[in-house]
Length: 482
Image (cartoon, rainbow, N blue to C red):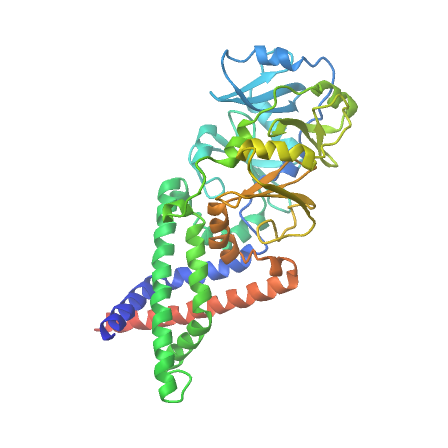
């Protein structure tokens, strides 16, 4: 036992000295992230600056298909209108294509057009424009490189807005304010280790975060072992802790109380980047139910998309072709919200409403006709279908399948959105969001309880980290004095 004690003490001391500051930063930034995250262009902002679709002179979908390279299979279709041109954004199994509805050449993205786009995003005076050929703090992702050069616009407004536009497409890549940048520097950047030099290489970034989290987990395990051992030692002397010095005493007390949470936070943070299959937890099915469902594409959209646009003239900002299995529908994004129109019928106002009669044969085709499928209506969040923000709408159909994976489908009847939970998805849920963000049904159902528990645990973790940081500083001082 003495040998294990020495090993645990060495691990806790060395790793604690190295990681205590990082732990303190993680906990403090985590508190910020309850209310503020990394800035991004929201879907609402993007749609608000798009033109409405018009029904004039639109071609039949079959005509658009003929303009695609022969043999390519369409995966997704999105319809928008930009500077007077109606555009089909089509993704196939071979790549992406943007086609104008009338067959004309797409307007070039030049300096004049970029200026107009920038003015559309913000009418305030533009005081400066930078040409970026390198990634920076607010655009740290490698995927942005294909947009180089990126133009950064500075606005003379009270909020200190900055806009990043792609020189290739004119797309708004990022839109920040002074406040969003400030809170991200205190929250998302340190919490997610979003430092540009590191984040632009996603594999290296993942490796660094995983190594730091794994080392932190080992630090916590060693600390919990030492804490329990010291509690037993203190009991023999009828004391709360064997330590008399202030920082040692409080690090031991706080670590004993909050150590398990600090461990689960650190480990679950690592699991946000680790697939549970890498830990040997695998699906018990020899196929992917979601992939099989996705591959069940509709043979046709009986409802002509032009009829939908005519029926909603001047209201639609964006239209996409979507499906649930073989059931086709159109997804409309308007100023007043989102609507899904059932494309199986010739009624352009018929909203999508999936029923058990629709769903049962589709799920039977996924799992086989002999599978036992139960469909019930879920009117409240359960352990897997839940969101603190409330963005997951209710009611939904809960389909449970009596298979080796204990498959669960949460299917929204009015949106066609489906969330699947099998063996690996359930493990992933418990090892990451349930532990890391307290995405637990009893707490989500009572927001005040979630805030109370989260703040209490985060502050406890912060105090453990700061007492550990003080001990690390004292340890380094002693080392350097020798």
